[in-house]
Length: 172
Ligand code: NI
Image: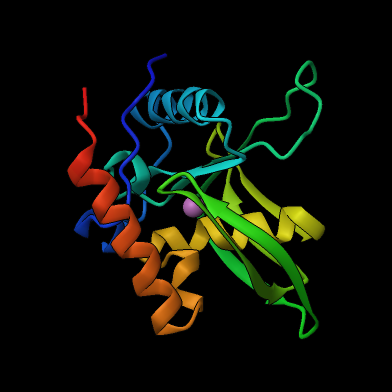
């Protein structure tokens, strides 16, 4: 496993639409292993492949709070089958939008069809943080960031801050 570099906004790659995976093989599993390690290293709860520069429809997540009891989840080619009309609000952040947080409304429940780590077809019925997190990650596959739900003014202020940070920091 290896830790990969996480791409941060502003970066055109994050706006790319990711492509479906034909089948889950060794290459995809290696990518998922790396993504999970990268996500844990950055203290995140979810990561989409495009955030490490790979435009494939692959997501890893772990929303367990207990450090000693990890619950990694892998989603390949996820598709939302059902969304609850009721909304839930969570304060969201994103490893590609460092140190920025905002309350976002999303459907409170959803059902997602996907392939797991072994390429098997699964159905997830999610609510609470799990529902919010999977929807946030699936947005990445469409080139959407959580800041896109904010007002134009708020969004441009965040992007300005991040651009400034990039120009003053030396990336090793
Ligand atoms: Ni994100």
